[in-house]
Amino acid sequence: MRYALFALPLILLLALVSVFAFSIDRDSSLVRSVLIDKPVPDFTLPAIEGLDVPGFDTASLRGDVSVVNVFASWCIPCRDEHPLLETLKAQTGVRLFGINHSDAPENARAFLAELGNPYDAVGADRDRRVSIDWGVYGVPETFVVDANGVITYKHVGPLTPAALETELLPALEKARS
Image (cartoon, rainbow, N blue to C red; front, side):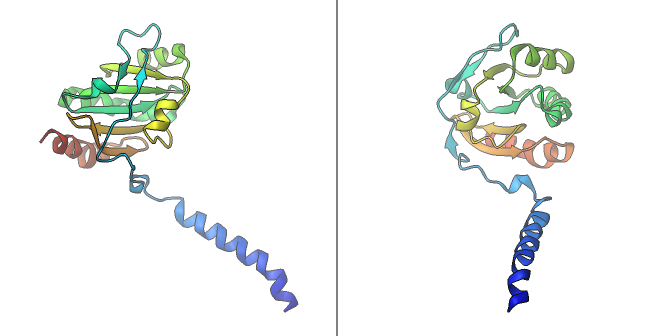
């Protein structure tokens, strides 16, 4: 009995480590957004100061299918996925909106000047309030919004070539049909 009391904390620690070990490679796309099949939240985002594209709001996401990408200049995976966003824009011509998450305007401008700006509009979410309303877990995240302003798809984490081909493009086509 005495040894069991000493072993109990060790057993609990091993169980906790096991849970984390099996969860570490979990597919982040399995995190389903509660906003899927719901209208985009009400919001208004101002333009990034000094950037030559406007900010946007809820009404901007109605009338045609759109892709909304949440990014930040300090986000390494955002830098990695950025060429795929440019490819998406070039291949599909989809309206592409950016939510710049918790970023200084000069950093956001430098990021887009260096990598290119595929966005039709970029809103500055300096206080992260809009990102929270969208249910963003962390950057980057990408959403497909149908012509009625309803979120139909969410990709958590950076886009990859495989995710672009097998997930985002089909979700875009589905939203268009």
